[in-house]
Image 1 (cartoon, rainbow, N blue to C red):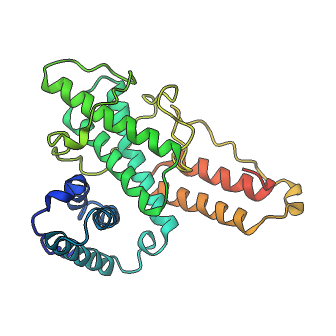
Image 2 (tube, rainbow, N blue to C red):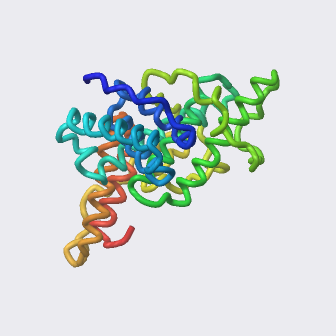
Length: 279
């Protein structure tokens, strides 16, 4: 992928989006779709902060040039041309980051990559807002991930051993101001979480905007061998078809990461909706 033009120095007014832009740069080669949406989030947020000051207007203009160049390079990529696919892609990516860090945390393996993964997951949940408001699960995961990144970073910095797993969240921690927590190189690609370390009992685990968080070892699929005959009597609304399509898109995105469990769960949701008219 062709290199993007350099941005001018970041205006002080845009400090709150500096880590999102850094994440975009880190993903230009790793995952251009993630890079694109990180820049789109930064653009939308920057416009709300200050679109009139000359230095801000210049910066936003150059950022827009980057967005247009990325969009041209990505061509007809469905994750760019279809919001539902882009949203699923971003959510799956954030989920992988979150689960990797959470597994490492619960196993007592504290290191810079897991801190970075917690923090990046929180940033990517910010970015999901380009598609609309966050769900309660999104908000809880973002808060937990951001707090964990700060907590573990500060413990290691002070020579202390962090407490593994969920503990009381301290509301006054603000990882946005922590330059070190977000400055460590990421793993080459989102690590796949081990199936045994994740305990859904503490971190909210009902869903991640339609993507079920694996609650441990993957259980065998419980897909019915044949479609119930009552399916012929079900009258589905256009909204039902849209939701079923959404679950199928989520499943397809999960398969890109070889995440069979998440793919199966979403396909089961689509099948149940299509055969019963209920979720």
